Amino acid sequence: MFLVPLAPNFCKVGPPVISSTHSGHVLGTTPPMGPLPSFAQYSWTYDAAGRVDLFTAPEGVFDYGYDNTHQLTSATFTLAGGYTGGTPASEAFDFDLTGNRNSQTVGTSTTTTTVDRNRLLSDGTYSYVYDGEGNRYSSTEIATGKTILYTWD
Image (cartoon, rainbow, N blue to C red):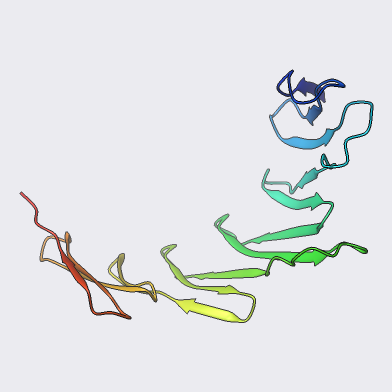
């Protein structure tokens, strides 16, 4: 492990320090000596594949999950005791066999995407049409019907 100082003018009592491994993974930050009520301690842990597994902040802990192709499938937030700020919603993601995202769930709201031949047809906000060569021909905002046409040369 080695320590890397942040910007020297960060505060009057000295710069905070980032703890890191030789592979470049950030492990945590340490504030300099002295009162810094707005500067908090953060830490990261990594799984065997080098992906962020846990991120810890004063607000709570984010726990990340991945599938066997290393795509992020979940980010679960656990609120820290005594924290009274807003709570970030947990998220989940689902992918098809070729790696296209099928859906994203934030809290209790799920957005589904529609994919055909690796072409995004809808993301819940827009629908998309492609020409015979696979180029996007148009995008239409689902709520308003407003359409943008694309041309290719």
